[in-house]
Image (cartoon, rainbow, N blue to C red; front, side):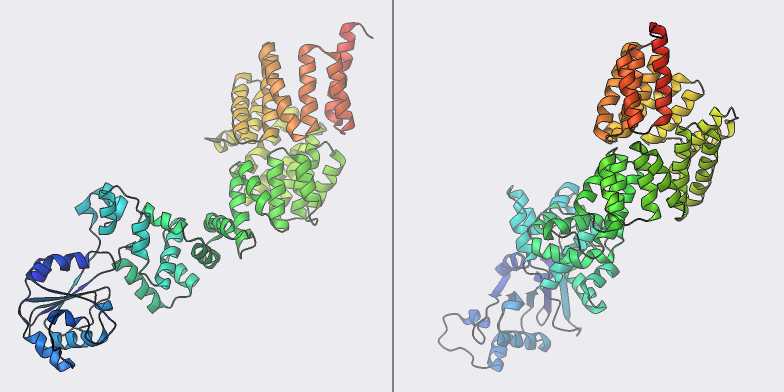
Length: 573
């Protein structure tokens, strides 16, 4: 107001700012000290006609109107340059360039059209700054006067936001949507956005300036305004269009949340780059042990062998072995597929088929060979072939080291230590590596492996603690197979230490989880342990039957020994 009311005769001030930033309100207040001309159009000189409203004779030419304006006394204000008729605008520009006449103020959404001649001034209105409003009010409104008024009246901000954005050009709205979406997965990168929208450098700079002057950008980033995101939710067609353009230009992992939104809007899982982003995101979930989240996503969106293989891996992690095998059997055979298929077959008790699959996987890359040797080690360990088991696990440990896969290396190292224990060999070096690698680890299968190793070393309290952590965490992550094994091992420790009731409860919990997986080996093992606890020959025979039918000869031999011992105790022999 000080700038507007301090003008001298012959001076012109151009007041610029985006829609709804208060230009008209400012001029209406100042108009008490001058004459306000609202911009109008429809016929020549309609805007200027308000100066002589009611007069019988009006100037018929630009020269006549220019002379009339030069003789005007007091401040002259034109509100909304864009709405004024072309003839009136030409006269006002001529008046300004003449530097003769009353002080002149022109408001406009655009920057000054007067040029850089001496005597011309520009006042650019912006949203009110955070230091003026305070943090809370600024967070609600981003300094927009229209939003401030709505907050003061306790009204919804949806309509005022829509009204503020409606004057933007389609290109500006598209760019703002793109920046908002990109900012949700990290700071918006102008190069990525310009490439996605195919904007030239000049177009990008001009449109960013428009959005910045309108108060929708702060240092090139969208204002953190919840009402802006609410408005975006009302633009599904534009959002889907922009997402389709943007996501192929983002890194696959970073783009995945936006791909999901694009899917929700378009119903398509086949957008360019979607499957790559899905695979990258799913691998990260699987590496973190979040198999259930990965499975939910892959079940809905997986297309093609690579994504389907990850789906099978997630099902394996959840202990849903028949489902995993069904997915794998529908895919073309590759070494990575055979490595996973062998593990699933082992879990289902198909030992011979699992060994064949593991041998076929050895022709794969380093990662696949590591997994194959790990499986061969598990097969040898189950068959009590401890020398072969140690050799296979040792190879797996070395290959996982080359891959930089610390978690897989740790699991293989635990299994190698078990084989060495059975061979009566010193495992102090292995224990040192296991202790170092397992610090702050919360991965249920690995906790289970370390607990198993501690149990073999005779440290039952420490083993019980790890088994309990593995069981609880596996349940939270919906890893039924790991939960079943962990609760079984909890029961074994309680049984060894004479806590029969706690052991029986743990075994019952383990059976509940094992029934969900279809894994005969674990189910029969738990059943046999419960039979031994309860001294029940029928249960031992049922466990033995399950194992023999599933080809689990190693455990079947153990429970046959238990059956013979029971019969000997009962006098049946």
